Image (cartoon, rainbow, N blue to C red; front, top):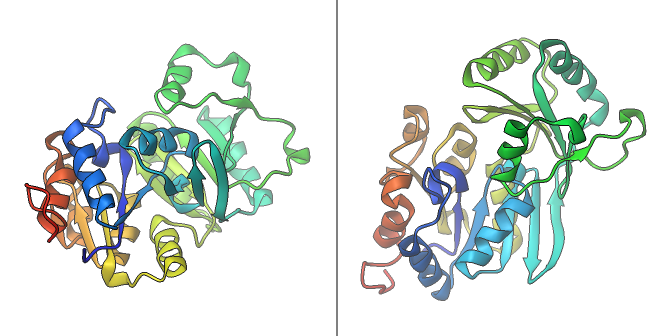
Amino acid sequence: MKYQLIALDVDGTLLMDDHTLTPGTAEIIRAAAAEGAEIVLCTGRAPQSSIPLMKEIGLEGSIITHNGAATVGFKGDAYSVIHEFPLDAKGLQPYFDYCREHGVHFDVNTTFELYVEGADQLDQEVLDMYKQYLIVPKNLPDWAGFNEPVVKVTAAGTKEAMDKVQADWSLWDQQFNMLRSGDYFVDLMHKESSKGAALKQLAEKRGIAREQVMAIGNFYNDISMLTYAGLGIAMDNSPLEVKAAANDVTLSNNEEGVKAALEKYCLNPKGAVL
């Protein structure tokens, strides 16, 4: 098979809008893996909300999480950190102050945990948001004594609120990689952290040439991996800028676009290797 490493975004790409994976898509992914391609989820999600998807498909291996800030390997119930991009936690204080002043919800992510101020007092709407990503937030301890490596900080809210957050923070002297991982989220990560950087690092670790890497995504945080990969494919539900960064456009996430792309470039509809 030409493509030895296949990176798949999750929300808006692999999953339909109801957050489910179709049996047809799972079957095609397994077929590509059976022919030697390494399938890697490349997502803004944390490991605990992306590893179950790999297990649902029936695969083990590696996942790129937190928009590239942490790459994790897993086999069965054993997890290991392959690489992290920890950010400078001291530089986060102004962002925390901004969120508190403007009533913006934010969380602090290590590779395997998510912390929120007053986690035991969150309203049901916020808890439901985390629940759909299989996350149970922990209470953020005293920041001065927090010494775990932080890989991502996320502000969350309505699209309009996040538009304002993004606009305001864009005016600051930015020491972090700030990106929009969805209409309702703004992420802060290490300056060098991105899906593309993590995918490049993993490919080089595997000895896989860029031309043998395929990536499929649908949002702005996917552009770096679409442009790194030898073949970058955007979903039909992607913004125009994402489509412009890709080599091809497949069907939407609600029309099994990942399945269609893998059939086109890796397997024909009958499962034969191209």
